[in-house]
Length: 260
Ligand code: PEP
Image 1 (spheres, rainbow, N blue to C red):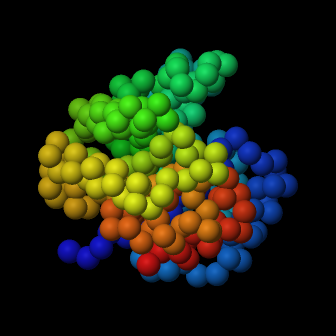
Image 2: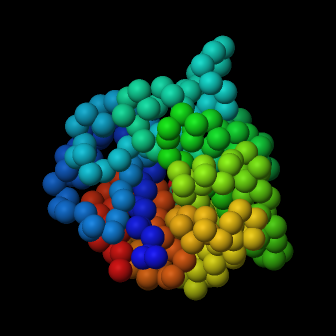
């Protein structure tokens, strides 16, 4: 089988006014062709999804940054996965470390937000609704120092595995995002990222199937930018990126064009 298509995701997070969104879409629309072996997706704040889908070039897909752990109903403030498909969204980012940390003022280390099981349930509901999912996993700094990276990531993946059928994995990409590298400017080295990516692929082979392991894309996230994208993306088990800060800049396309 050929190499997996690369997947470059942008995560705009909770940024941009309407003017900023319009300017960013304009810049993406004029950014030149996308290489044949790359899928490009941008993760857009909820209120702008519809606008971005209707104004953005059609060869860039649109993702939401979260969806609800339940379907329609009395879930005030939440967005059901099916609602996302109604506005042309084809992807959702789930289990981002900021969501796992929570938004109640707790320190990032405390994991007071979404549990592994919540992220897994969301992933299943999103896939069932027809969305593709970038599911984020990754360890904190202390966990890497303690040598338990794959224990943490394995637990995150095991929850997802329990929620999904083997066939569901065709619509899932794993975003490996070491928390210490997110928004810090301190990306993992290509060798360090490759090592964990290959361990994740081995985990999938052992716990899901060899076929899924061969096909699933594993994106790297954490301070990916023009200056380091090429080196990261040339590693054998790095199939793309999930890019925060740099996805708000023209630099995003340097990453898209950085694929081998
Ligand atoms: C992210 O938001 O998933 C991310 C990796 O952010 P940054 O690229 O800014 O580190």
